Length: 138
Length: 414
Image (cartoon, rainbow over all chains, first blue to last red; front, top):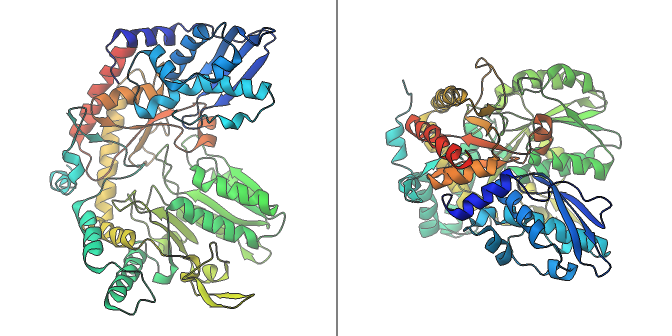
């Protein structure tokens, strides 16, 4: 992982001044989980419209620069997306947002926020949230 | 004055010559797993190349040689920890499996309402098995706190012991704080407690102590001791459960299958003697050979010398870390409290994972996270720490390089 790039500056900027930090009032979706590998805790809340599209999304909790920056960027990026679109977001898209070469051991940090959100969606739809693993690297 | 000839020792560890991200490897993660000297690697290669076979019932030459080597490894292990009888040594996959074996077998003999006590500073491997088997068998799972110095609170332990307390299981050296519990004192307290059919027993998690400090089960007077080969210069895939013979005789088997039976009929099986009744299936033979080589290597250095080196280097690292204004160190604040070469810390305002990612770029390997001790991390009110752990091959120059590299972390997060 290289730390001296513009992308890294962007990550640190999101880490120090996160976008959409906090909790959505009267959320449609809300899920709070601990990263099983590092103990970081992340809560994601979102409001959906009648077409099951995200109108607002916020996150709260603590974590490393990678996990916090990733969910901060995603909270901007996923606004207006449908739950189906959110469920189909892949690792490559998150890494593209971050713009750096994330070391294999840190990919789960990058994916944590998205996974917590995706599990919130599955829970909301009455499906098995554990179909999505929090500690996977995909 | 260093006790060990570290320059000479380092020549035995092939991995220490490699580079990471173009920089010389500085391995400060031995508490998770130590590196291996050539003597261990060679012993295992020699086994596979010249006398590999399955053990026990092979009457042929290779079978006999492998059986002798496997049982010699038990004798060497028994002598190393001061056990009276090599049959008190059970080889498992690792410390975790040794604790699962004991927790499963021991808890199955307890009555509903009986109590098990562990400390808040335990690794999950000495916490979760006891907690889960307590749930399964209707036992009361009690937790003894640690005091301000990170040691088991003896006063509280005394107050938690009742005539229903069957076993206490505590770590010898904390894998997060490096603090060293006074096992002799704990053993005296635990053994003085009378139960309906005897006295309370003591299990000691030696995963962080057996590799670093002279451990003698007879002197410590513990009933069970568990540890892993891979943290003491040996291979992965082998752990040890020591238990007093008469206690092991009374415990039921953990896994069933070949090698652990007496006779088998359509509806019944009688079990073999200790330790074989606890070793179902083909055991880790090459790993036992490797473990024996690791023990011989440590004995050649001398465990007292290993411990002195650890203490000297830990004090050196602590002294330099304390000078960093943005570093918070966990564990005893006083240098008078003995601690092993395990130092947990955080840099203010920077997540532990970010610290080690940047240090990794400098070729420095440390670990960050909850170190499989979430109840302790909750107690310390931190989600994660950075952990520095060293061993016989760690040098002061490496500690210096590590301290200097903290500036790279500061630069990124400035």
